[in-house]
Length: 257
Image 1 (cartoon, helix red, strand yellow):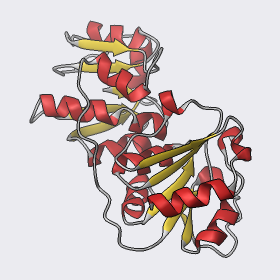
Image 2 (cartoon, rainbow, N blue to C red):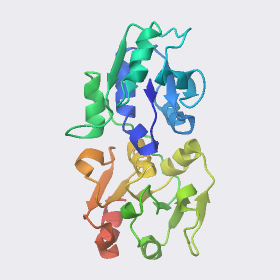
Image 3 (cartoon, rainbow, N blue to C red):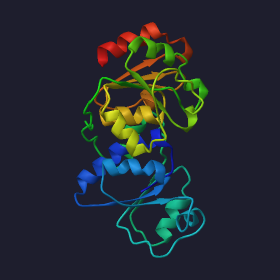
Image 4 (tube, rainbow, N blue to C red):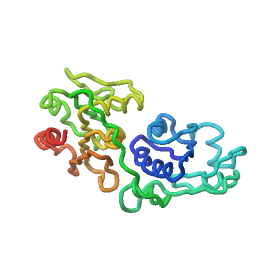
């Protein structure tokens, strides 16, 4: 499976991978993309190996076939057809390529549809071990970032801030910072928490898919296409995310969590 994308987009791939695994018990995946993101798949499907699309021999697939590839099937979720065509030229007979982005409908449903698969059961990894609520103030775009997390933390009392590279300069005040964590370590922290509040971000998608009670704050992005999926997800959206007030967020947190 070849999919080079960020955390949020990859989480939306996981239902398709799980459904594919269920249709072919005993099969194992070789994953090509960005290994730091691909590592999430190990929690959900059997992974034989992971490889960077930026390293040899995989990057050569953008312009030529590669010898010695012995796979039963290849799935390429990329707009460009070059990689899929070069996999065929490399001797893999069963190659499926599809655009990873939907024309309509939810992205996860689109990816399942590219393989004619039905959605698997949503995971439920949530095992709360504390009363803490994890707040994640960052996202890939400033327009997606809600500016009132510190005020929310003050009202909740049991908040901790999850800090990644994008949020490194965030001032968490008196609250504990969970930082310098790998994605598997982030997963462990999330499933042990009471709940999670975040913006439209990869970590929000991960929390939701793990089954953690999740409140996702959305602005310009359409959650009907890109919203997180999971057993315990609530979404609060306004086109201008800054106009969502703490008075609107707090009761959702206290009710859902």
